[in-house]
Image 1 (cartoon, rainbow over the protein chains, first blue to last red):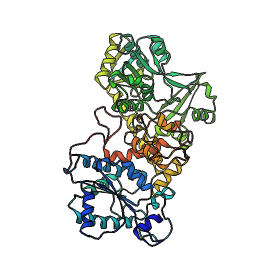
Image 2: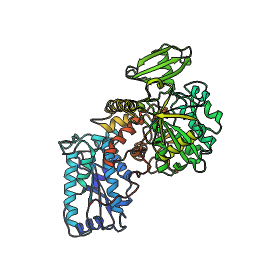
Image 3: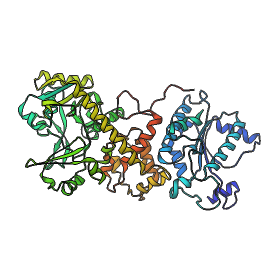
Image 4: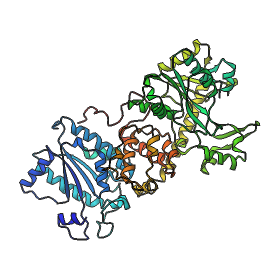
Length: 186
Length: 389
């Protein structure tokens, strides 16, 4: 964690969400690049992993990400029909739908997984998404609230955001996973 | 739907309710419809039974009758010991969970379903051998080795001893004490094996036939073929089931399903709610990573298990990394048939079946996939459906 704090220049003791971000090489990674080239400002909480296709992402990578201390996981891929490999993003969509239901079933708030589509030219959308997700992560609070002792390298003490307790209804998430699942995808 | 009875006197006596299943198996074997029959053979006592591949009439007849205190699963046995019925035609007697597991394995190309004739038997639940012995000693006050027969009917667990004495106790009361049926059986909503080729059982047999005939429902063409073979061989005598009998069978099933839903709600409540993840891992952290749950699971059939990869689960730690359980749950839960083998095999008594079943029933709402129902339903996430947007 200390490493991460240095990376982002955070003060000791202040909790900042860490967001594991998977970006598709062909769209979102280029989109993030575009945002950087255009000097758009966005919060520094994301740790980006570039993958050749969102269809490459095993849902277990995301589960492992949560266990490794990611407060939110973001998966950014191509728009439907734009996949470099034709249907990788459909596969990803299918898996994310299942993964959200699965996370709900094992007691991780499915809202901690965010799946969206950002093309190479959408630098603005990338920064907007980043702002949106970081504020979402702040309302959700540290992952340790849900994982307990199983979250690695995470602060359980120190200043925590006000709404750190997980309350599905406060966030407008339905009890059954179905509604929550489709809400974010499109 | 029929009432049936074996014509052979010995088979009729040996069988549980008229010996139809034994007679059908023998007829199928003798008329070369199958090469052998997979039956559950009794060991030295009623608490001991194991799958057995019978290839003669005598072997099949010997295995007649049911064993409620010897929970087994034949699906994985077919995969491991008969090479998934690739080159051998078999008839197999199955509980609904056996049938569902066979269907799930055949979807994974582990069992050749074309060679498997499934003769389903109604199942109201099975008991684990050791707790059953304990229960007979404590609540029935009889020597467990004196038990000749046990039967679940009308909410009572009825025990008949070798000297012919009956004793019955309410199953609800026994289960409240932690005895009775296995917990996964308490939660089971599938009591009539409608996914098998033939669905047999004693439910819905009324009038003078009660206890002496078997209710038979033909579910598939393969089932019809089995039955036709037995009729041609004059091995069984059939008559149409009366309407009241059919209604009674449906009513009994509805009662069992209602009980199962209630058991599900109460058993899942121990994990649900606040801090669910921590509550699950309070159980999982008992694990010592022996992998028995994976060995016995009828869904786990990968040649190379993902949890064997060092980057997923670091080697040689106890308890194993949480990823071990999370991987297992993720891979198994969409298709879990709630057979309870993992829980039986677990040396540390982790309620694995309860947890997997809970995750299964939760993700089922999203996936819309009911495991083990039909060979036509594709496994979730295996095929790309038509595009939504």
